[in-house]
Amino acid sequence: MDIYQVGGAVRDAMLGLPVTDRDYVVVGATVDAMLAQGFQPVGRDFPVFLHPQTHDEYALARTERKTAPGYTGFVVHADPSVSLEQDLLRRDFTVNAMARAADGSLVDPWGGQADLQARVFRHVSPAFTEDPLRILRGARFLARFTDFRLADETLQLMREMVQAGEVDHLVPERVWQEIARGLMAERPSRMLSVLRDCGALARIAPEIDRLFGVRQNPCHHPEIDAGWHTLLVVDQAARAGASLEVRFAALTHDLGKAVSEPPDHTGHELLGDAPLRSLCERLKVPAVCRDLARLTVRWHGEMHAVSRLSAEDKVRLLENLDAFRRPERLEGVLAAGLADVRGRPGHETDAYPQAVCWRNALRLAMSVDAGGVAKRFSGQDIANRIHVARVAAVSAG
Ligand code: CTP
Image 1 (tube, rainbow, N blue to C red):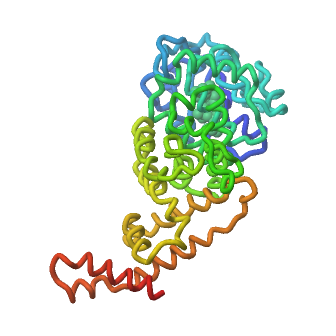
Image 2: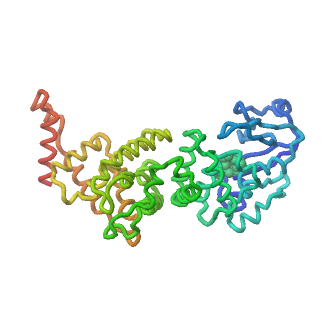
Image 3: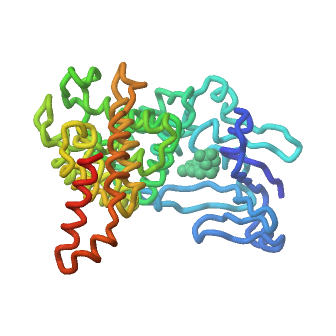
């Protein structure tokens, strides 16, 4: 049997990037031969094994044939006669379809090296269409490799796949996994833009797609378009090195603008809850991301407008965030607020003095000895007494 390193590890090493995950393809072997050498089988459907010592992934060279729409519609064909070239041909992008032999030589039958130099993601063959998840992979690769572009013919193929209904069959967990990885990359806007260009965004996240073409007030938003603003905001969150929760909150903070009245969108914070819920349910967004996004959608207007709020309003809002028990919630909403403010042309380095006011308000409110209040006033009134004491502390501060 012959063993080659394949996929992202070959690509990343050629780009001079650190390599963490290593994948290998094994040519000329059978399942029994792998088991006899101590490899551990993983997964029910694919002939993939873990190396007994390194735990790297080793897959038998294989071809796949489409049987049904969507991600699980595969019949895998792996036998010792499948060549390395055949295996590489059915991979997603040419830059991912190179192999490195044990002697260090590069096997590059499909032009991966040339595309790597030209910084292009190009599909290897029509077999690309067998796996619609590749649309999302391509999109998140663009967010990570910011100097790469998508080949025109690959974008065209993605459009055809979307039109054929291919993305409608993707499993939500897999979609979320790719979106989350793209959000955590350097320029998440590049993922969202290409998903929009090929029509996939309208299928997997219509709530976000609908923001494009929505007018905002040019006095506050020189970019005018609410979709464009959203792209700038997620990139600002990424630039700040924000967590996934904050980046998702940045992505969704203005969903209400698709249904509120342009250009001022009064009340869009309340209207954003319904589209956020439907997006989170469709993609099975994890609760931590959903919860911070809900708070950000609902309260970002008030967070910005802190100077106009009374002490009473501030304490109520902090209670709504549950910030007394979970101060990290306030920090999350503030981080999304900063990205919101900076996600406008000409405002990229704006300060966010509101953050100082909110932290100050929380500190003052938390200086109240809630236990002491509880001891002094027994009965149902305690919560209200604590609230009143907190308002007094914020007022006095
Ligand atoms: N692959 C593919 N189609 C997919 C998933 C994977 O063709 N839907 C192939 C590609 O050759 C890819 C390799 O399997 O390079 C390994 O996949 P994976 O580890 O998921 O991705 P990487 O390309 O290594 O990218 P990353 O560094 O982001 O993990």
